[in-house]
Every structure is written in C-alpha cells, then in structure tokens.
Length: 462
Image (cartoon, rainbow, N blue to C red):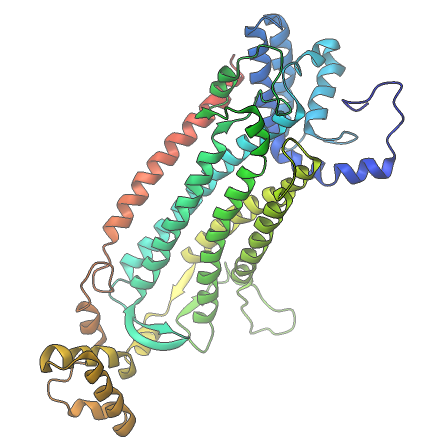
C-alpha cells in the first residue's frame, strides 16, 4: 500500500504507477543511505521532543542502520514501492508495526527528499573536489617536469609562438583551479538543511530543526520553509553548472591529447593501458577514453539545461515536475567524477615524445613576433612599423631573409622561452603558487569531508 493510500482508495492504474515512478528506483540506490541517516536524525529529534520514547527510537535506529548498511553495499532492493522513502517507512511498519509510522510526524516526503539530495550532493561534491585537486596536481607535476621543453604554441590551429610543454600543462592546471571555485560554491548551496520545512509551509508540531541540521553535519539551516521548497533545483542547477565548466575544460584537454597523439603530430604516445584497439585494423590504437571524456561535456550541458528547464516557471511549493531533476543530476555527478578519475590514469600513462615536440618548436615561423619586438627594443621602431618590416621581409625573401636585419634575434627556442619572464609566461611558470593553493584546498577538503563523515557516523551512535 502506498503511503497516501487507504483501504477505500481505488487502485492506481499500473501504467500510471509505472509512469510516475519512472527511473526513481534505479536512482534512489545512490540516495538511500542518506535517506536513512536523515530519517534517523529526525527520529532522534522526535525522541528529544518526547514524541518517541528512547526505547522506541533505538528500535527505529536499529532497523534504519540495517537498511543503511545494505544500501551502501548495494544489497537493498527497491521494488514494488514508489521511492526510497516509501521503502524505508514500509519496512519500519512491517517490522515495528505502528511505531514505524510514527517517524513521519513533523515532516513530508518533500523535505525528506530535499534533505537526501542535499546530503548526496555534499558527499559527491567533496569527492569531486578531491579528484579535481588530484588531477590538477598531476598537471602541475607534468608542468614542472617539462617546464623547459620547447613546444609550439598554437592559435587558429596554426603554429604561432614558441612556448613549452610545461606552460601548456600549467595552463590546464590553473583553468581547473578556476573550475574548482564553482564546485566549492555548489557545496555551500548544498550545505544548508531543508529538513523540517515539511511541504513548504511548516508544521504545527513543535520540532527542533536546528538539532536535525546539526546532527546531519549541515553548516546552516535553510530558514524559510517555503524557500526550502522553492530551492528545489538550486542544488541541482548550481552543481551541474559547476560540473559543466569542469567537463568543458576536460573536453578541450582531451581533444588536444587526441590530436597530439596522432601520427601527424606524434607529440604523445598512448600506452596499451589507456588505448583500445580496432576489431578490423590490427595497427590501430584508439583514444576511446579521451573521446568519451570529450563527449561528456555535451551530456553535462544537456543535463544542466534539463535541470534549469524543469524548474523554469513552475509555481511556488512542491510540484511533481521536480522529480525529473533526479536523473540528470545523479547522472551528471557520476559522469563528471568518472571523467576526473579516468583522466588521472590517462596522464599517468601518457608518454611524451620530447624529441618530436622540440623539433616542432625549432621552427623559425614561431619567432616572428619576437623579432618584431626586438626591432622595437633595439631599433626604436614603433611596433606596427616593426611588424610590417618583419612581415614584408618574410613575404619577399622567405623567413630566413629577415636575418639580414642587424641584431636579428636568435632562433634558439630555449633562449626565446627563457626571455619570457613576466609572471605566468613560459619562462616563469610560478608553479609554487598553484602548488600552495592545492595544498591549502586539499587540507580544507579533507577537513570538511572528515567533519561530514563524522557527523553521519555519529548518527548511528545516538
């Protein structure tokens, strides 16, 4: 029997039931452990408020812990129920009788579901922060290792100026550090507790919302009870927006590695540990993992658009439309985390063909802008005049023809790189700044994760 059914109710049509449940029973396996924790905190609060006896709370806690342990082991089956909330309450009633029905006092499935999403988001965002920092650290390490290896820098997919491979890797490390700020902001949004807001309009039962928020490790309370329901979707859209930025960066890096590992470039080689083969062409080594990462950005853009579109224009208060947020949200979070993990393995198994990269950097075309700058600094020309001279010299005599100018710069790639000394340029990467940031954020993330895990652990010791 559904939570909202009575014996006199007409039976819900099977097709309508299947349609309204949708994929929830598949997705709820990820949310169920947090649902158990939130239900336990709520039950403890009811006991503190004298709505449950302490012995009754202990019985409820015992069953919820059993469900929790099965849920984290993925051994709890959700079937013939509407959702995880129905499964929990149904099992409690089955094992404890009417006592199992007492724990729903002072809450709705609406705030129960919202709290579960907030807890799930916090847990996943902390994991994503760890993976993002780990990937950024690998890029920083590669940047240090290849800080002096000359490499062509490209604009419009054409060789433009001389750079280094270290400069290239450091650029992606810093870009991910900016993406990280969005993840941290999403965590702040999720770190507010909606439990006790009921269906948005509160409850006549004098519950202690502050207590349950503290027990569940939330930083603060989502104060206005209607705002807690209006906020349905805020966690999802804020999180997915942050994840879009991460996957966009990963997509660009993946695309570069695909092309730099192609025979035409041969800057990188993909080991057998990160490349797949062809079913028909024995010689092929395919960058399938990188291609999937590249495609994931599109999926995340779609997930974010889905979430934003679902919440657009719906009336205040809970509407069943909000159920449809679950699939793009859970899928987006899991996909992003897997991409971050996969990219770490890819970079750790990527072979750098240093001689090929250095040879490509020994291209006189890459020094045209440097030569124009030289004419400005040593001849006193305006930059535009120097630009014209260099371009005309190249056009009329071929690039080597410009060396007829007195005091023409050296074409030595290492020397040109070393001369680019301003902060963040190829000759002055300032990697220590990024490394300090990683150390600081890693410490914050570990502390926040420990605090959150300890709070959930203490739920079972109440």
